[in-house]
Image (cartoon, rainbow, N blue to C red; front, side):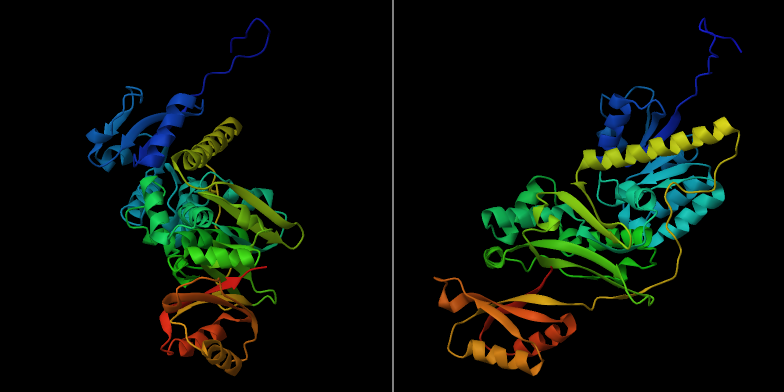
Length: 443
């Protein structure tokens, strides 16, 4: 080997990892921009796949990049890593399996796929000596997956909670700041690109529960399926709820929670729902489309991860970080003269399966909207008393229309199942203008 004038050996230049982007939407474009403009030395973009690819072409992508509308061009190529950004289960799962079997590692932001098929796909990657990175599947650009698996590896985590859906948080904080109705806040979120034309996946909690299932597996080592997690919609929230919440020293957020049974039983409490949170809580301070994840461990106590959880650029940062991690790991193996490692970049521990329960006890906020008349409070108090539920306080804002009067009753701690039974009976009264809205009050 030739030596430089300094006497130090000159290393042969190592060729960068070849990367294919599958799906050139918002995140795909941001990933491509980072790879083309920031140009990490470990990586080289070589392929872009998208349906009807000609309408996706952009001038700032270098001419050596192959644009294609056929996934076969990617799967049969010599790329080292495929970045899957099309979302959903089909055909994403099939393409990822084929990529792994053809000797390619994979990076994905697909929370539905990882939450439902993650263990099987990571096992396939392990057998093939390839790697799967999925940091971008939870909390966008916040490095929570790597934080749980590396930074908190020495702790014994038993609780994870947070705000995992930036769209819902944007809607709720807009309602909070401007006292807008729900539909107006959703419309603005759609206009700004935070919400889809059909926002049900976000507002009804399905997006957040997929992410919570991933965090429960990675952080709590609990094997659960997203469909086992109870989720409730934020669409029942009205502007008046923020007024009453403020009187209680709280605000309203969509909160995702998972907690192991403290007695060591194979069950896990998990839910995604709107809740009242104290203004002093880190959850209350999360604004706009940001995300926050809080973990609690036996030894390390509470740890908070926060930052931008939505949008192309933050998510793309997580994708590219996974790409760099895979490339550097493979280079280190090559330097040591070892064959491909059979360890995925992130692991989903198999552990034991846990029975998921949505039962919990807390104080509750219940808003009623009624045609006002004497005796309503007495009727409600009788039903609550029959179920052993104690009333804490009653709030009524002055000046409301008596034909559509909103007022709030707060309840002392009781289980959600008992409250639901009581409300089931209360709904039979004829003074309701709309069904009661109940929210837990978190402390």
